Image 1 (cartoon, helix red, strand yellow):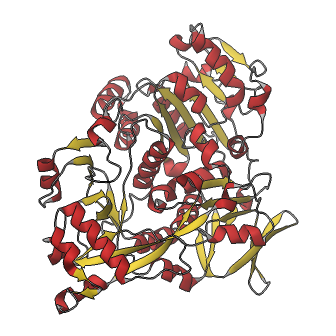
Image 2 (cartoon, rainbow, N blue to C red):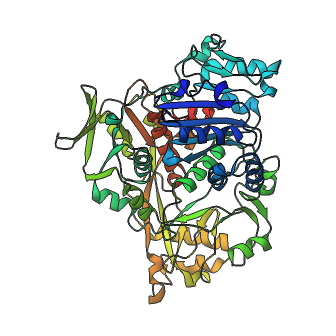
Image 3 (cartoon, rainbow, N blue to C red):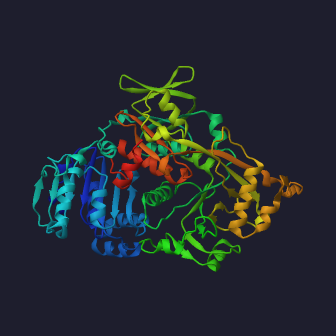
Amino acid sequence: MLFARLGLPHNWRARAQYTLLESEFGEGLSFIRLWERWRQEPTRPVRLHFVALSPSLVEAPVLRARLRAQTPPEVHDLVEQLVRQWPLNMPGTHRLDFEELDVTLTLAVGPVERTLPSLAAAVDAVLFSDHVENAQGPLASLWQKSLPRLARDPARLWLALADGQIVQGCQPSTLSSAEHTYSVTEHMLRQPEIEKEQRHAVVVGAGIAGAGVAHALALRGWRVQVLDVAHRRSQAHGGHLAAALTPMVTRDDDIRARLSRAGSLRAQARWSHVSQEVLWRCGALQLERVSGRIVDLAGVLEGLTLPEQWVRYVSCAQASDIAGLPLNRGGLYFPSAACIRPERLIEALLQTPGIECADVQVERVEKVNGQWQVVDVLGEVRAQAPQVILASAFGTQALLQQSERLNQDARIAAMHQLGGEITLLPQQLLAGGPRCIVSGDGYVLPSLDGLCAVGSSYVHGAQQIETSREGVRGNLSRAAGLLGRPELSELFNNGESHIASNQACAQALMGWAGWRAVLPGRLPAIGPIAHTEGLWVATGFASRGLTWSSLAGDLIAGALSGEPLALERDIMDKISQT
């Protein structure tokens, strides 16, 4: 019955992509049945994308029990695959990948009046439930307004109604002329289909942003060349022992909080293959502040529909028990937060089949006969491809300028860089170090190789950045405040190191210094350069490179591969303004 209502297999025969929107996901039975049929059908589309709305999500064991009770044993393996990836009940967009990314499930969780307008997808068919089909008033108006925008081709959109009726095509859009203005998000969703032999891209930049984009493209079968200067990459990440992958929350769950949550979830899903020597979940505490801008962290969670498995408030005693060290205040605890070795993670991502790296100092890019040519400082063309992604942090601005592609009114034109230092403290100075990430005004990471990373400073207006006594002193002060150990601040006195005299602790002078590329509003720039086909950027990640890297990769690679985007439209409209 489901397949007849959707006009299958005729409507998806020999397509590269087929995208279905279901008005209510329910228990996921339609998804399981369609996925099973896709596996069996010889004329199936290459890739199947299933998008669904859901006001909330049941817990994974409940989902398993309900689906197993309604499906035959031969599809229980599909049920188990779904359950293994099933997300927590949190608002926003959740992306699940199956069949080596040939089958995707995009769940938009929350009230329909929020999720439907926020969908970033171009769909071929809509599967309606009784509740939506019989809707009147604002809900009916919302669907009538949304369908023309969501349709890949409004004249051919297949509407499968709950009573078995079928409608092909939808009424012309009732959107106002103001809503028809140029949208970068729409441009990303409606990229021309790229033939398999044309799936070749060059990524400029081999840091965390470039590695995230290259990895996402390679997973989708693209051939990717990554260009960067080897010594610059080693300078950027060498000595960066460990970093934290932590989400954030705000009282009103604003765009930065939602983007942080989406990025953390994508990173955890995309990087699940790396070893625990590279990434390990240890949890993170965000402690209450005792000075400066004090925020009632317990009050922040009030009104937010976030499960305790994601974040919860803990008392001082509970925080101390989690950290394994005596702390003097409580705060928020994120159980899924992780520590990462950045350099090793980047190496692991760039070793994905389909990626090749080259030591090239890129000067500019230029378009010749439909291909983007990447030119080095000697004027030689070092690579060319239909798609180029610039992911060189602050250097992206100069590349666009030298390529005569920088609009002075664009966000990237206002990008600047801030320096920052991390100090590595011997774990014995911190009673072995905390068991989890401890943050607030700065952070202290768990011990790795006998050292705890403590950070971090913000240096404005620096022409060059390197580790310094001033930076060490500031980081020691931050650690002292977080851990309630004022004696740490006394390790430096009048510029003289008290610990340098102790050979076992001399490593405390070690550290790492680097740059952050920062855009106004602290939101990244991820998307195409406006009105320029085939040139993309992933930059301005500030202090959240690890959080946004894999999400940026999936947004760009997903757009180039014809997928629904794994993020809400209102956030995309902000970050895609490059």
